[in-house]
Amino acid sequence: MKQGTPKNIIIGRKAEQQLLKDYINSPRAEMIAVYGRRRVGKTYLIRNFFNDKFDFYMTGMYKMGMRDQLQMFADRLSKYAGHPVKRPKNWFRAFEMLRDYLMHLPKRRWIVFIDELPWLDTPKSKFFSALEAFWNLWGSNQPQLKLIVCGSATSWMINKLLGDKGGLHNRVTHRLRLCPFTLAEVETYLKYNGINWDRMQVLQCYMVMGGVPYYLSQLNRRESLTQNIDRLFFGKMAELREEYAFLFRSLFQNSVLYQRVAELLAAKPQGLTRAEIIHALKLSSGGGVSEVLENLCRCDIAQKFATFGMTVRQTRYRLADNYVAFYLHFVKDNNSHNSRAWREMKDQKRSAWYGHAFELVCFAHIDQIKRALGIPGIESSVYGWSYHAKNEGEKGAQIDLLIERADRIINLCEMKYSIVPFELTGDYYQRMVERRELFRTVTHTTYTLQLTMVTTMGLKRREIYRKYCIASGP
Image (cartoon, rainbow, N blue to C red):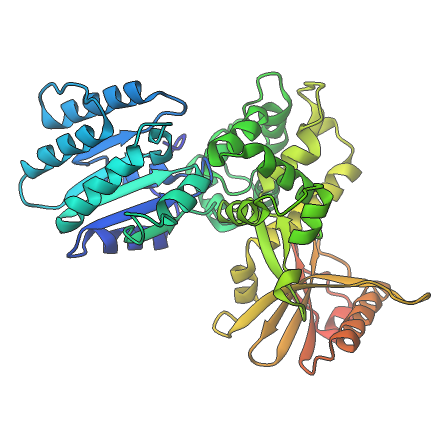
């Protein structure tokens, strides 16, 4: 439960709550799969949405053997049934016992919640086959049954449960992916926990931790943001320093390859294509890289984006998780255990980091940028674009974010982090114009090209701003 947050208070997650309400009120049996990165609040959402009122609830335990998992199942069933239950010999018998218990309940809606489902699927346990038999032979024919399964091990949830080609193929009636909080939700969460920072501090907090509720729950309202960062990342007992390795182990089966890809993307902020990733990692073949990239995107650790005017093969991937990016940039190779490392760091180094991290925040808030531009109802596509000089004396250029709109306008976005209103000089504006014209020449677009600045504090109102009407976003 979130530190300092009253029980049953769910911050944000409005769309997810409405979906859950629709699913459990349906006239048919439902198997609802909830997945997302570790610590994103999956269990908290389900338990608080249902106020812990389940007809059966159990959770798998990380690296616990089948015998112990079955004993835990028996203990949980004993609690709900109201009488002692012996440990079943296998998962087939366990699900038979669950079926028999449910059949003796009144004919009303039955809510069954199995958390950390992948951790129950231990080697040679045949857990998945038993779940398949339970659902196909009985559960799917019980319209009052609402089975909610949840797991952080995304590769298992996606590839084995949602992507199953056997008996559970297309049997999951709904999938609910839980994403990190938005910046606005982080602000609301902090206020609920008595942390009344200004918006610049909230932004800086987001740039370090992202929108992961558990990480935010570790913040101490009696400390400044800088003190919190030092305590959580750089001290001897720094909790978020130890989180990184377990994050990947809990999410993915072949966690080493996933970490290698994430660390490569962290070193290439402009992103890489699949072919470039394979080459950089010196893999003899694809080596499952496509699956790795897709799973990283499904966990919001990476993000894929199309390159304007290019084929699908030129799709690029970049790191998207602020916590992972911060850890790899400042913490991974820092063995000093200096509990004052962040506050003693040179302002120039921190500012450079915030500039990069602000871009990650923008990429995670494309819908909000569109809303600020007044185009939420206009169909649009998002791209990146770069051009490498081919001739001597020619200049290259890169546009990290452009929005191509159905009303024949393309917003060429410049993302700028600043702690004060950004002063747009004539020289800076001229470079933006040159890049715009190079984009027009290279792509041959006939769309109107609109220069757009996405800034933290808006623009300083100088003559050049009034003259050229450069758009400014929050």
